[in-house]
Image (cartoon, helix red, strand yellow):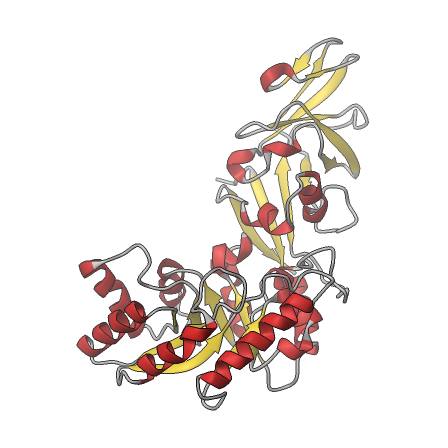
Length: 376
C-alpha cells in the first residue's frame, strides 16, 4: 500500500554537497559522514550505499545505530559517539560491548570506568577494542576535561586489549559568525593532545559541518559533517556560503475537498473562521509525522504550483489548507509540504524560522509514516 506521505531524497544533491565539502579539505583529510538519527531523517537504509561510496568513515550516536549499520553490511570504519556504557549494566553491558568490539566499531571513551569496562570485555572475547578519546574542550557536554585527559590516555594505553587510535572534540559555536570561542576550543583540544604525548599514531578530528566550511584550521586528520551533507547550512551566521542543495522534499496527497460556508470555524480550538464560502482541503500530515504544531495558521504548502495557507491548528495526522486560489484542485493532487528550494516559503529553513527553531529539528523529526524514495 502506498504511503500518504513521500519523502523524495535526491541522491544527486547529496553527491553535490559532499563534493563541495571535499573541496574545502586538504587531500589527506578524511571525511566522516554523520548518519545518526536515520541520516537526519533522510533514511539510512536507502542512503547507505551512496554514503559508503563517498565517505571514508561513518558516525552514529549509539550502539543500536552502530549495530544496525553493521547488520546492513557496512564494513568500513565506524565511530560511535556515545559511550557503550550509557544506561546499561551487568550482562547487558557485557553483551553490548562484546558485540560492538566484535563488529569493529570504534568506541568513544570519556572516563576511567569506561576504560575498565571496555578492557575487561575485550579481554574476555579475545579481541582488541579500537577507541577514540573525546575531550571536552569547552562545550560542557560529553568528553573528558582537558586536565584529566593525560591520565585517561595513559590508563587506556596501558591496557593491552585497548588500542587508542584517535582523539576528538566538538565545537559549541562554530556555526556563529564570531569564531573566537571555536578557535579557543581548538587550541584547548590541541594542547590536550600535546599533554597526552602528541599527535603520532592518532586520528585527530574536531570539525562539524560549520567548522568544515568556516574553520579550515580545524580540519586536522578528519572532519565530521552532518547537516551540510543533506543540503542545509548549519546556521544563518555562516561566513562562507556554500551552494548546498537540500536533498529532501516532502509531499502528500489531497485527501478531501469541501466548501465551508462563511462563518464556519476550522480545527481544534476553532482558531480560524472562514470569512466567506471557502474551498478547503485536507492533507494527511501532522505533528505525529514531525510536522510542528507551531506552524498552525502560519505556514504554507504548494499545490498545482500555487502556495496556499494552513488554516486552524496542525493536528496529529492532518492539516487544513485554504484552496481559494486553487479552485481546480482535485482529490489525489500532490501537495508539497516541505520544499527542497531554499527560497520557497515552505522550505525546511523557512519552516524552522517560523517555529523559532533550527533546520535540524524540522528534518530529523520526520516520522516513519513517510516512505523515503531515492531520486536523481
